[in-house]
Structures are given as C-alpha cells and as structure tokens.
Image (tube, rainbow, N blue to C red; front, side):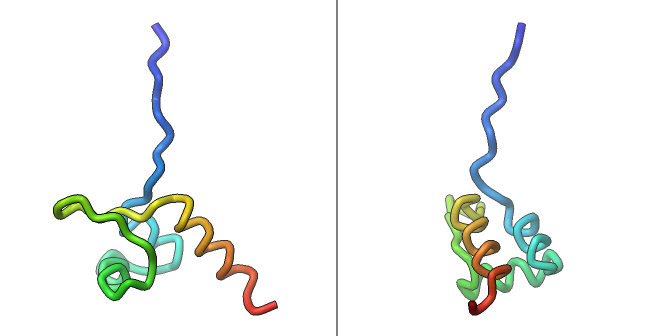
Length: 64
C-alpha cells in the first residue's frame, strides 16, 4: 500500500538559520529579534517556507 507523505511547509529555526549561514544559537537569536518571519505554536517556532524562501530570494538579488 502506498503511503501519502505531505510536503513540509515550514522550516525549523536552526534549519532556516543554516540556509543563512547561522549557527543554532545565532538562528534563535535572529528569530527572537524578528529578523525573519516566524509562526509560534506554544514553545515551537517555525519559519513558513513561502516567506522564508522569498526572504532568501530577495537576499540573493541584492539591491538592483
């Protein structure tokens, strides 16, 4: 039987921070400062993929 696996729609904070070249601690510090978009559910903090990918794309384009 084939099992359905949903695509993840969020990054964990350290996972997204790693895309920015940040350590785990620096990732949480940046998240707490509001440097990137977060969804918080209780203690769990995640970065929405759509917003995170948009932020990464804007950062790679620079100021053109």
